[in-house]
Amino acid sequence: MLNRIFKYQFATATHTPLCIIGGGTASLNVTAQLSHRKGINLSHIRVFDPSRFHYYQPSWTMVGGGLYDAEKSYRTQQSLFNKKINFNFNAVTKVIPEQNKFITDDGREWTYDHLIISTGIKVDFKGIKGLKEALDDPNCPVGSIYWKDYATKFNQFAKEFKGGKAVFTEPQMPIKCGGAPQKVLYLNEERFRRNGVRNQTSIEFHKTIPVVFGVPKYSASLAEIIKQKNIDLHLKSKLVEVRGQDRVAVFENQDNKVLTEVKFDLLHAVPPQTAPKFIAESGLGDASGFVDVDKQTLLHKKYKNVWAIGDSSNLPTSKTAAAVMSQTPILVDNLLHIWKQKNSEASLPQKYEGYTSCPIFTGDKKLILAEFKYDSVVDETFYRHQDKPHRLFYHLKKDFFPFAYWNLMARGIWYGREGILPHFLKTITNTF
Ligand code: UQ1
Image (cartoon, rainbow, N blue to C red; front, side, top):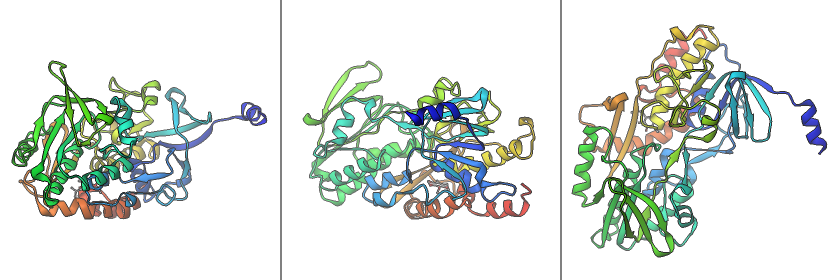
């Protein structure tokens, strides 16, 4: 009570020049790169995220495929973010951009000069009837790589699978890492062969969208792989209900809305995903609910001190960690241009072309490294035939990227496909 009166009487908003909503990949990458720039006082930065832990989510496909230990997929936020940065374990409930202000779930108010939104996309396990209950039932053979514990659960059931019907699903877009539902499928098809149960197993893959992959070059390759592996592909087929007790999954045909029941012995389900609600409620979103930013500069279309990066933005590209690696230096340069150098939006120095990458495990220690930019235009780093599965890319994804994430990205010296060189060039040439 006293506390309330106290708060009511004396509550004033706390001002921090740069506030960042979300403490995931984009937030860590941006703050780590800012820490190397001249003229940056890290105590002028404040990050908000209710999670005590930071997850390397790209490893969860590997957890579900039996290649990675889930316990290695996360660290505490404190061990990663620079100690001088202010970190608040509160969720933001509403932004009032006209007043450069926002409110957290404990009722406190905060003000900023610049705001970056990097909350990511929300996975909605409750968005499919019965799915959450099936996932939480330890005896029900249903799992999902879209959460650490459900990925571990799936791995356990897949490891002990004795044959029958294995069903893999993919919801409507947008989802983070559009290729992930296929990666876990191919890794487990290989595992069933290795474990000698493939001949007793039929595999179904149900995709809600009408194509195998959004970029034609990779789509053709992947369709061929699905055929070779004798996987029963169902396009325009959406998972709408799971009846865990009966081991039944219900699919809705996207053309005629007809429902089909499929009896399964193992189910990998991918939940539908949505923009965090506070974005739309704060007037910061577009019709899809994601933060409405300029697709090249990452600056909000209406509020010229609000930025967005990664999955919570409406950048029209595939939502991946690789995309964040590419967006980060652009956001940092553009932000400093207005925030520190007091320039206007008209002369923003960097433009994002939509680069994103999807490393797709295809089984048998091989991987297709899909790389593309806006409008699904292929944009490959290594050579012309990246649509063919390759062993080298397998090790890049399985061994090198987790290393680069924890040891280079978290230190602000990883520039995605450009490697670490840009860091040293920026250190030499940077006046801010
Ligand atoms: C990348 O930089 C990165 O970060 C560590 C990944 O991990 C999530 C990736 O998957 C990819 C593809 C990149 C981009 C880098 C190269 C060399 C293509």
